[in-house]
Image (tube, rainbow, N blue to C red):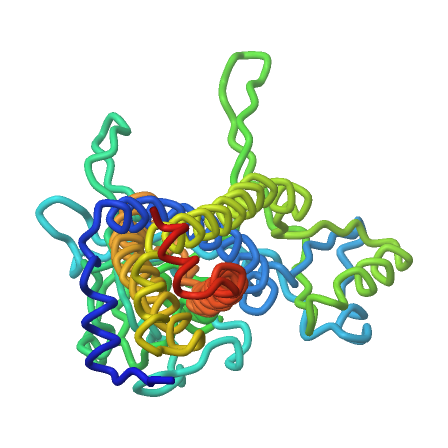
Length: 413
């Protein structure tokens, strides 16, 4: 029996690589792989969105509580409660910063009080130690996500490549108005990763005392008219508290404890898990169908290809090559075709991923959610289909190579 060297393998494998059947297979599997990658990405997106929210979103473990007596002193003693503070510090406040004005958009910052220094990790610079110091994002976009005209029409949106590098802004300053409409200058002393805490790319943190100067002491106001028709404004004060729980898993336990103590309790943020789970069905079905169709396509292609090449296999067997060597010829050719298809499919998918994520999901990026390529899923797909190709090739080739060289040449006619 003869063995085949790598040069002979390549000569046989590449001899009909440009055959129309091979090219048709490449385009067919290419389409199915892109569909498969896209559906897997959407599935991963939903799972990762839930996970990142649970791990990073501080609002997800923050509760709003209210009591008619406005007594909140005992809340901090409840198990698993990090702190309790006025709901004035919940939402932050939006301010204009003229230093960041551009021709087509105004400088706008979201200012939040740093309630707990452990909430953020300083990447460069230092943490807040003075009332007029600020910490801003590493990827800093000091504008609203959407730039609108006076009529509310959208002029432009944020794109990820337009952000400023926060490291270049350390020791620089910006001026905003306080609640008395006086100018207050803040110095940027450090930068943090906004994506690590689900903050927007224009969110800066200041001290609690500085925030008190900036934010309004009222939630809003109501307008009423007296019997003479004269309007009167009544300002509404903050009358609730926010409670930060140390872990998302303890939310229900803390909620029940607060309710048992007579507090009205509501979540400040929650995502609909049922809705997210329902959304998963469509990409999951598409993914399963694309996998099944890929397997069926691969099987039919290998089966027809073996029948088409029976004459070649018969000749190889006649001149003394082993069944294993002949099977390897078929397997290597199939793997070449699949690998070429997979690499092309990945690059096309990656380009599509970048275009869609920047064009349609840039708001997620702006608000601190990182959209990722599910590389692990794609690697599993590659090796999974490689194993399937190997098994199919082994089974079908064994079936045909039971015949001797004469019968193989006869069956090829």
